[in-house]
Amino acid sequence: MNKAQLKIEVCFGPDCSDKGSRELAKELEALGYSIIMGDCRSQCANSPLVLVENLSVVTATCAKVLGKIEAWKTSEDS
Ligand code: FES
Image 1 (cartoon, helix red, strand yellow):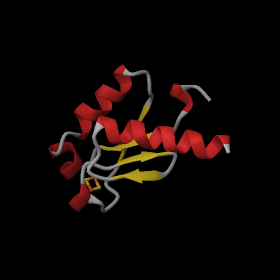
Image 2 (image 1 turned 90 degrees about the vertical axis):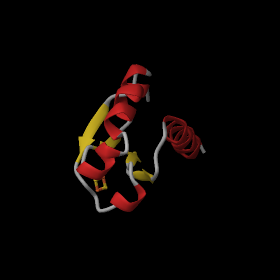
Image 3 (image 1 turned 45 degrees about the vertical axis):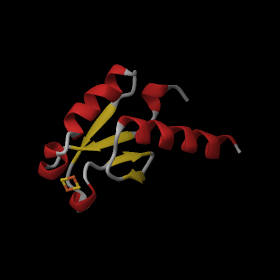
């Protein structure tokens, strides 16, 4: 599966947006990932929220999301 096919949802709800989710989405897009703009999923206390193939990344940073992508790929390969 190539990068653009991975399902990466970034919460664009108000709290996550305040914590930089939209900038994070742009960073991930710049790295070649395609982003789904998500709605609030009631994880606002742990914002920003990103879902990588439906696996949550809370208090997400670019590095944490990339780590989750690697973990997901590894689990798919095994
Ligand atoms: S605003 Fe993102 S989980 Fe609520």
